[in-house]
Structure formats: structure tokens, C-alpha cells
Length: 219
Image 1 (cartoon, rainbow, N blue to C red):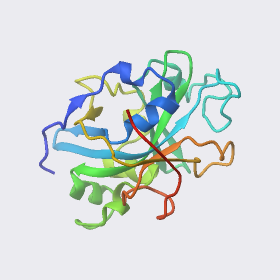
Image 2: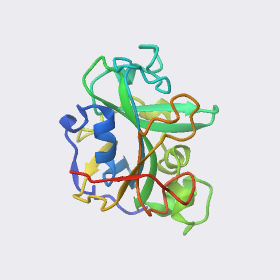
Image 3: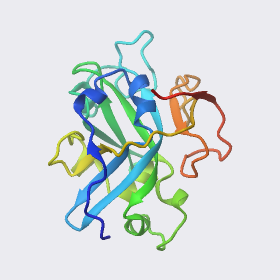
Image 4: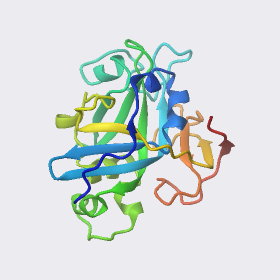
């Protein structure tokens, strides 16, 4: 892993201080970067899901915050632009970013990345051979956290907008030409809410290969 130069510019906190259904599609094309002493691991965001805070009517029953603040979800009730990392099945992790203003409890789940830097190290982290298909590296929230070496113990609560943070969200100016909005996947509650956003045609998008949905224009 040789890459040490940070791509693009750091996203400001104001970017995240908006409702998650507004932030989520605008995160497509942005870059999630894990900076380490040996270099950087980075991936371009190609799929996300918005989860609404309990102040919404009706509250989002699929959100971790729908019953209010707890020790587990307290990051989401804090300022915008912070990493909320949680575990699933006792083995895998999922990465989210807090949105809106303090106390509202909303966020965006990062569902898939397209590797930008450190692909061979990502493959190693995933137990795969160098040159493995990118879809096997960062397609899906559990895979991308494993590929980037992210876990709740070390990375939950990190400020993604801080220059000295090892985990950052950055912008190199890329805007996806074709974005789809679909229902969320992998959940049982409010599964019909159209809050999943993905870059059409990208091989790293998780779920079925034949992605369908309504096309939207990013501004």
C-alpha cells in the first residue's frame, strides 16, 4: 500500500447538516478515506441509504434512533459529520455518518464503495488475492468496512470533517451522471420507503446486479 496523498478536499460539516434524504444522494461520488501510517485506503461512494430521525412523522422504524438516544446510538444524536459504526451478526461492521443538527438522530448508511486507493490492501483485509474483482472488495456495508479496516472500537465517533482525523469524507469534484433511487434493502421495517440511492451501472453496487429505480438529477 503506497498511496499517501489524500484525494480531493475535505467535506465541511455544513454538508451534513441537512436531512439525510438530502445528504444521501449527494454523498454519491464522494470519497471515504481511512488514513494510516502505511498509507491510505479510499473508496468512492456508489450506494447509500438514508435513515430518518425520530422527529420525523412518522418516525423511521428501521432507524437505530427511532426509540430515542441510547449508549449505542449516541453518535447519531450528536453533531453532523461523525462516523457511527455498529456491528452486525457479532462479526461485521457498518459505517454511517450523522446528519442534521445535534439531538435529531438521523444518518446515512454507506452501502458500497468503488476502490480508489489501496485495492491490494483491501483484498488482503478481506482475505482475497491481489487483483480480486472490485465487487468482492467493497460491495455491501460489511465488506467495505472489512476492506477499509474499520471497526466500532477504533472508529466509532470519529469526526469525518476534521483534518487530523484518520477517517475522512472528501470531494474530488466527481458527480455521478446517472443516479437511481430505490427502496431500502436488507431490512424488514419500512422496507418500501424510497431512501436508497445508487450510481446506475456501477459494478460495486450491492444487491441484485440488475438495479432498477427512478432516475434523479443531482444538483
